[in-house]
Amino acid sequence: MFGLSLLVSGLAWWLGLYLLARDPRKPLLWWAGAGMIGYSAAVVAPNPVLLAVPALAWTGAVLLLARPELIRWWLLALLPFFAASFFVPWVVLLPLAAATVLAIRKRAYFSLVGVMFGLSAGAFLLGLLPDAITLPSLGLDVVVFGVLVAVTDAVEEGEAIRADMLRSLVISAFTAVLFGSQVIFFGGPDLLVFTTVAAAIAVQVLANPLASAVDRLALPAVAAERAELRDAAEALPKRRPLVTEDDAEFARLTRKALSHYGDLGKLVASPLVALTDDGPPLDRAAQLKSMLLASIQRLKPVDGDFGTSDEWRYYNAVYFYYVKGIRPYSVRTKREDLDAEDRRALQWFVTQVPERTLHNWQNAAARLVAADLMAGVGST
Image (cartoon, helix red, strand yellow):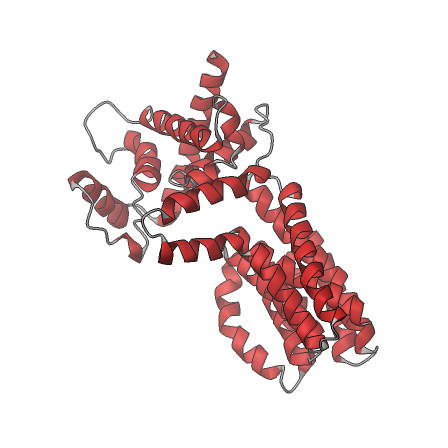
């Protein structure tokens, strides 16, 4: 059973790191990735407390998908439930079961995976079956859950997922076999095999973040440029074909491209790159950025440089937020480089525009920008 445990643990470890590396800023990927990594550790050192980690983490992930307004309450309940697992291990299944029920209407497939994991975890925690059977059997639930989260995130981003995930899996598996087999061949202890495989996978999956960290230390003058090139290379397998017949989907992709306006590495993966001329990936991303700016500028009223009337709201919502990078509801907006117009816009957003209203304006503006881009496509 050692080989099966090693396979399941390595697969869960890779999938957890893959989710975290997709976008470290997304809470959903953090919750799901933490669950994968916790399960991987539970396979290496079977313990009910370790198995509580994926149960609690995936409860957070399912809540984010189905009822995100409840996540703040779950953050408060997380520590008490984890502490209780030291005394009553199966208690961690209660919040997972509740989240699974809440997800039935919105995310039925996640509910199914939650039921599968709950049954397998319950068999382990209650000692109904040997650990050597129940822990590896949980691997199927782990993989299905992780893949569903990755696919959900890719759909939201307007990205392809198969080629990127397969590439990461193949190269991680190759390095894990290469280094892990040497430890086995020379008769190393089981724990050393697990840690060697984990280290080999981590170096491959986290290659970009590790390279960026080293560049910031060793090559600070060119670190940003090198990071941009790496992000562009990583984004290429994620680009999917553009379908212009679906107006709603085109508007959604435009909204996503606007949210990545200042990040050429992200724009490389946008299907809207198909609207640009052939050329190197970063050049095409820069063209798309220029096209978005031109469409945004056409939203601007002709009377003056800044206004707060209704006719200005859509322009203000995307120009100052995405082009100028002003984040009115974030403490990180304390910038010293704002000119007089930017400061007026920031003050207006903070005092007059609720965050939800700004979000609605941005969605409406994205539809207008999408219509403008489509008009440009039709005229060529």
